[in-house]
Image 1 (tube, rainbow, N blue to C red):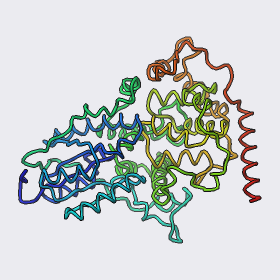
Image 2: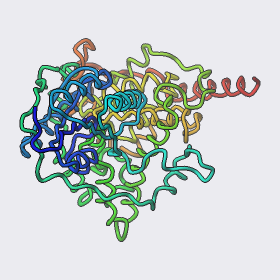
Image 3: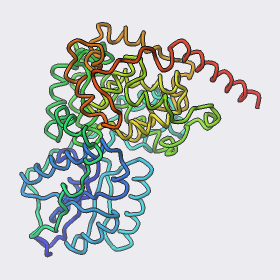
Image 4: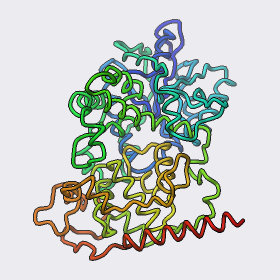
Length: 481
């Protein structure tokens, strides 16, 4: 397939960066001067992600394909081992370069390093770029030269650092004379594992780069002012709602940072600062994951491997199904099924109840969130669970046991959030509460007419005490060793 000019085509290997604006690999590919062929590969790394993430990714691929068509380009889809697919496409198209934006989790890093080495051995140009973070993890160091392990000093280190301005989307696309064949997205069945949940999510999740940019603009204009005071209130519209767009790369952190900067002065300075701190918490998670890749699968603090965690079982299953008998926990778990997301404050409440009151290993919860969150992020998910459990860096002390009831009274004082997602016992259940039963697996046998649990599967006082006893026993044994 000859090139449109004397410069050979470049393959733009897209992954979790499904946007046209502020896409450094895309910009570099166009700057080369030759045709650019965008490709997305369903390889074993991509297939190993959870059901909700794959559903979300499928929607984003459709949106990006439409945007590319508007520029006269095509998104090429291929399935197989990434290196094999890229080699085949290079031969088919005459491409002599492959460019992509970096990922930082262990499986992706291992794959990308192997691909880069092999392609360069083949004589191809292989380059990667930072399209996912404000700062590369290895560029932020303590005064002693090592990585940060606590968030607050990390924030201070990057708060005033220069962040490069976002790159504009291309106004034209350098297309090849002919396009290589592409798989049909429908044939992959990426959303199949969502089953009954797919149509429920489809009604509640806005997808695509344009939707992400519109949401950012609306948040900054309408919701930012209340962010600092109300971000912990799930009954208020006070959060950005950008997490799922960030997770698939429909928007970049640099775009968010740049759009928020003018608001760091004046009446909204405090909420703008708080919002940027939350954005940088994501950066901190990737900083940690880069330097400690085992954080995704093992206790960051090795001594916690001896803690008497309980494995999966009846209690964890009640938690997954939103049937613990604790409304704050159950509402959060049902929100997850209805929207694919979970309010951050109640995400902590649900995680705390599992790991403290139930004493169930954080890995059980991490795996469930990995499978069910449309905003699943490998670094944030791992850090969040270990932070709550007490086994991670910058962790809340294990003995800080949330009381879900008092948390609900403080952050959902009128029960609006709980009423929105719990149907049992309500005369006129909210549509979202009923939608949970549409999305939940039939095998669970749940119905809105069921009786809500008469008592918690683990009582709050009882659970708190057994958590403290387990911690004290573990600490005593560790200190004596």
